[in-house]
Image 1 (cartoon, rainbow, N blue to C red):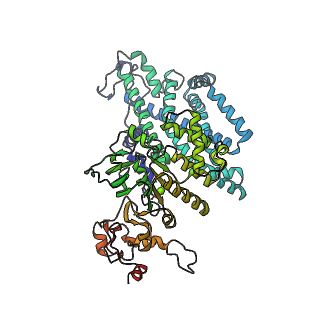
Image 2 (image 1 turned 120 degrees about the vertical axis):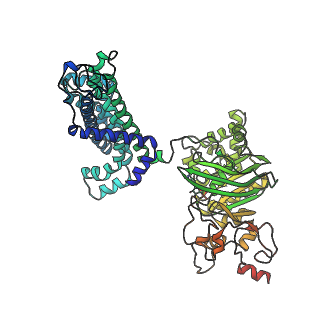
Image 3 (image 1 turned 60 degrees about the vertical axis):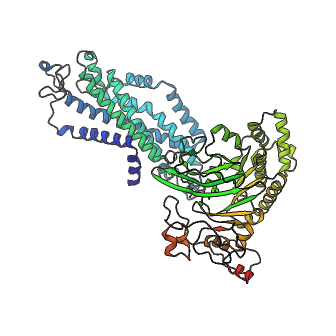
Length: 639
Ligand code: ADP
Ligand code: MG
């Protein structure tokens, strides 16, 4: 609850609304205790006194009644009616909605068509008709306002309930022998409660306005008792000569409705997890680049060259350093592996290359990404967009979520081709068939008419690869493309990628968490931990003699066939949260070799010393660790 309040109050406008509304509510509550004049007794001698006159702080109205007293009593009445109407409409509407959504079928149809009939009438006309039928009076105005708002709640809550009613926990409750009433009250209601609260908090303001509107027309509260609407109505005649009589209730209505709406919006944002995480704000077309430090110069390291890249997520006031200064490069025809536990920043690194990290909250705060020497982070959107797919293409983990379920795979391939090339659909179609053949899909001519769900997982991933190849890119970034597949299909996909690389001279950046995959495909490998590279070098060297304790632990997690009874050593502890990294080596808290020096300060990524763990003194084998001791296997080899 305190967490919820904190969330609400972090929104300044909501906090302001809450303060104003609280003040008004307190005033309304203590009104009977205040030394006020009687609001309903006229004193014709004191007509139309201006504000701040003696004994009448806000002046008097056309019958000489004290405006302050009438205002406070009127506010009480307006608030009471508005809130009561919201509660009634909310309760009845939600009950209708839950019942309709839970039972579905004919019950749902019957109820919702009735609700639709109510909704078919213009809102305020319906309220007027109800009051006309029942006769004027505050109570009848309340009934009218509540009645016209019931459909709104019913529709809203039904929508949410329908989504919940088919879920497993409802089935489980049914299997447990619970009756309908009990399921609705104990299983459904708690789950839709937040929607009800949101709907109410955003509509109370409306209902107060509607009641005021009816009273203004003389259909609500009857003289001499006044609510805010009837005060406005009575002041109408003196609007020009004595404006204070209208301004006073007008300001109060404004304050009440504004504060309720501001607070209501704040409550909705705090309760709605989608809004809270910013999912409804559309991400920008390119990741925001806000580089503070100096931009590294081109050192012509490869076709794609990532230099000291830093990517962060700015969520509220927390900063997640997902990528903290990563440098990598690939040459044409080379396969680079990036390996690390999940959450180590592999995907964010890969997405940063083409500015695909969602912003907000993502921001690239430092470094450079050079493609053939050109800094992509400085490129304008149009040239970057041309390069996406044309020069650098991606393959993602789950082909089921990257392929559109409602389009045939052929159409999606054709679209990918036509996005970059002005070719006729016929030509694009021929090219699409060719691509499917290139990724070894049998019967490409008929398969091209399949929908994604008609294909197997491996087949879908082949389509994903075909799509990446559609525009003959030079670099393919594959983000765990085989993680969702079984081992035999994985082997086929890896073999395919390897063949394509040799045939077309592709540079491949292959992200995985599996050392076996790296061994099969990659020439070089970079090990990532907590957003940084902790070890990098030729695959064979690292597999033979890993120098970083993390790499060794990671390799120890891989089961091997024919190794007899070997204990699989899981790495103890969890990867650190990247918003709160320790000062020294990020792996120190989980490392059994860690000393105070490790925790003290920055550890550099340095070439392995000759003779220690790389007997040939490989300058390409770099490691970020103070304890790079030799692995036993390598020691034997050197002695
Ligand atoms: P992986 O290595 O598994 O691909 P990611 O690159 O996806 O890991 O994520 C790296 C880090 O970035 C994670 O620790 C995660 O907490 C953080 N991160 C990713 N997306 C967001 C986001 N939208 N908001 C905040 N943090 C994020
Ligand atoms: Mg990932």
